Image (cartoon, rainbow, N blue to C red; front, top):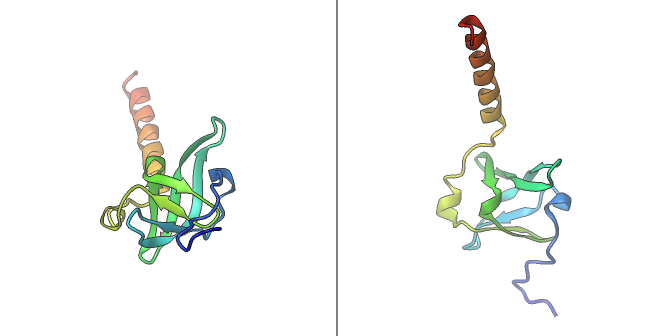
Length: 111
C-alpha cells in the first residue's frame, strides 16, 4: 500500500513527460519539466529544462536525484534551485559563434 508521500514508480528519463512536477530535496516544487536533454547517440542523460514562475532554468543531470512517474526530485534545496542557470541553448549558440570567429581568425592569420 502506497503512503501519502509516495513519489511513484521509477521511470527512465527517456519517457519523462513534459509537465511532470520538479521538486527540491526539501520538498518545494520549483516548476515542471519543459524538456529532457540527452546525448541520444551515447544514451547519456544530460539534464532537464524546468519551466518555473520566473522562466525556464537548466537542471544538470547530477542535480537530479530521482525520476518517477509522479515527479522529479532534485539533490539541491530550494535556495540552491533559485540560483539555477538559464538553459544552455543560448550558451551553445554563443560557443558556436565564438568557434566560427576563431576559425576565421586562424584563416586570416594563416593558422
